[in-house]
Image (cartoon, rainbow, N blue to C red):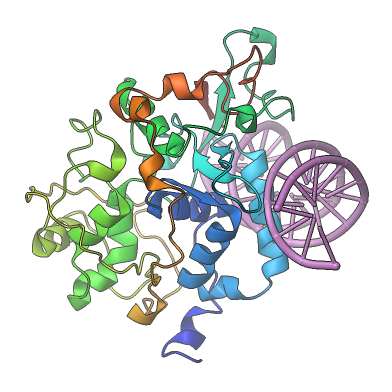
Length: 322
DNA sequence: AACTGTTTAATCCCAG
DNA sequence: CTGGGATTAAACAGTT
């Protein structure tokens, strides 16, 4: 079914890397983890470009999942049958993107291992022992737990700063007075810009929320974000999740380049918004209480010697400057 | 069989 | 120019 603007959008490749796209999908999920098939769905629902040549880009995406340390594999539990594992973001991948931008990743995320120095940085991609070796029990929200772990560590930055999302993906919506930004942000589980410094002890999905579209728009404008229709990457429906107190919004969209020379494309029509049905978190109620109550370190630690000698590793990681 | 995941390699692009 | 990141292709193994 052709949509308005399809021709101007679908043939345009989104300016996001596969890593970014995958991270978006994972971040968008309630449990901060998705099976491969749902990652596919997320991307295809939002980016018509990726509704074609699926063989090609899905292969690339799988390659990225395996190749990049920033993605960790979480096994399914027995009561979650299906193909493949869940994929989540490594808790320490916060600085992966330059200036928190989805658009470019200037630092490569690699896991460091402390127990075997000779295997550090760059040698963690061996197929030996991955997170899949973790017992599948109690890992229903390992990603959230990982986020908590990351939050508990110093200097955590959100991997995909909402500032950038505001600046790029939402501005068209904002201009149009469409989706309530704050609601969407909350739905996505993004920390409020400006709160990043003091909400690091919160788990992503539950951090504070702003509710002022005007403030967001003003902030975006103040940050010099160019206006006009662009990718509506997150044309997500706003669920009844906006229930937090309002916050000020010292938003600071930080585009990679002062003026990203992106092809002018129309924002995604609301009809592209994911119906939400595809977002079926794996047993949300199975979140390990211990994980919720404390940093995820225990969950992410190996149950057997060497079990975590993976890209998930022993949670020692580094963002390697290029 | 189809899907998922891993790995290697070639190529292009960009920043330094 | 060089190194590294991103993309694409492909082969292969394991799983459902």
